[in-house]
Length: 110
Image 1 (tube, rainbow, N blue to C red):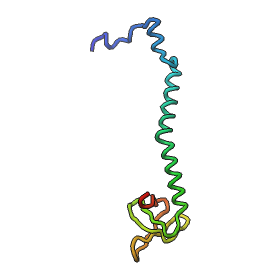
Image 2 (tube, one colour; image 1 turned 60 degrees about the horizontal axis):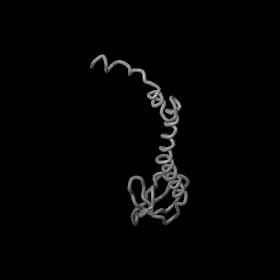
Image 3 (cartoon, rainbow, N blue to C red; image 1 turned 90 degrees about the vertical axis):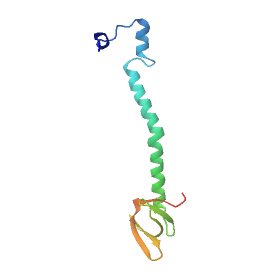
Image 4 (spheres, rainbow, N blue to C red; image 1 turned 90 degrees about the horizontal axis):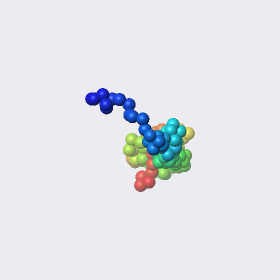
């Protein structure tokens, strides 16, 4: 590298100083941009995820006997019994399993 490339930029005139401040003027512009970026992230990522989690919680609370569900592990079954924190699923004619309610993900076809 040459000395010229490592030296600080030459002083700017009145036109360059106005451009350096940008639209919002100096340091406050950076804060405004950070707030805008966070707002966009919240609208596009966090809010939809929260909405989906609420919908999933409503689904788990509305489980009733006979509802067809899929577990987090991919096991398909029919709800046989619902307890406070567990669900008993019938996965075959004579096979039942007890699964934590939090692991019930969705109904088939949903």
